[in-house]
Image (cartoon, rainbow, N blue to C red; front, side, top):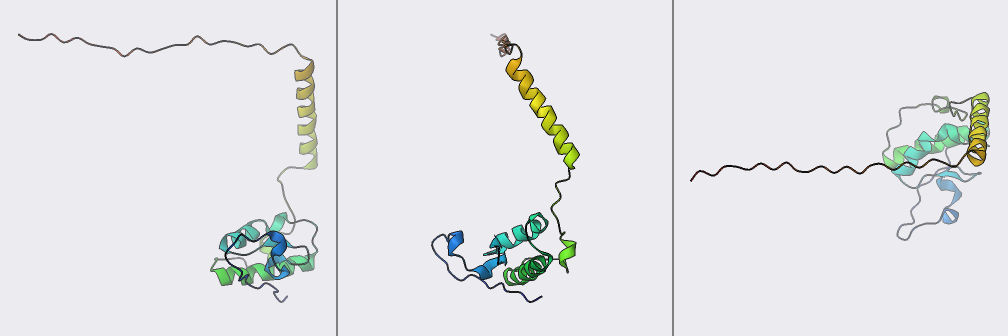
Length: 139
């Protein structure tokens, strides 16, 4: 797939996202992942598998754009295909795990709102004194 990315040459004042041309985005049709400097290119690489709502062709185009931008800004990129960066978001938790956590949180909120008032304990304030020693003076 041929890359559509082009460097953004406008410098000076801060550029608003809406002012950027489509050609500076990894996903130009969706205007996702702007790549205006090396930092943004590294960010696009890191978040490649987190982008949702894009087709396989758009991912291939994004990979080509990221690769071109990385070369332009001198960012080392060891991946040679988009599949090495991943294709779908992975949070590391299953839907069942998320539901279990949600039930536990709901039970905690319910218990806290209907339970007895929270006990407050006061700590005894302790102070440390510096030990002083007296020396006998020879005289």
